[in-house]
Length: 101
Image 1 (cartoon, rainbow, N blue to C red):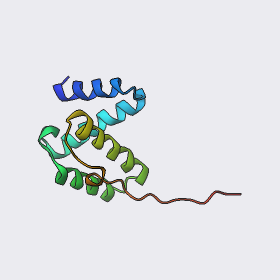
Image 2: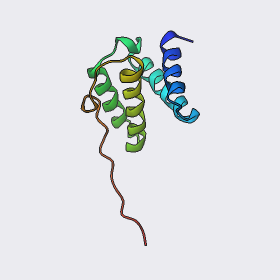
Image 3: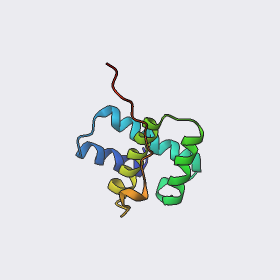
Image 4: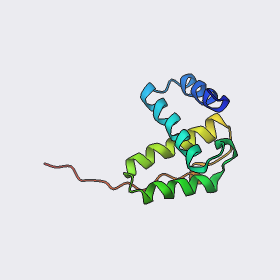
């Protein structure tokens, strides 16, 4: 287990995240690492933006992109303690549906 993964898992446990969410967050950072073929600690806002565009081009559902964005926000802001603001890593707009009667 890498030091970054251990750090992120400790932060997730410390904040009492659900185990399923923790697995998705860890998988998201792993996929980001594989996509750029380097340590996620070396990545910045531009790479996060590129990864979000990549997910949108793959036709990933907006809710999935939201979840991945939440994972990236957690990793960079909570685990790595970078001073990114929420608008630096934006959530995609998700379509709203009217309730059926």
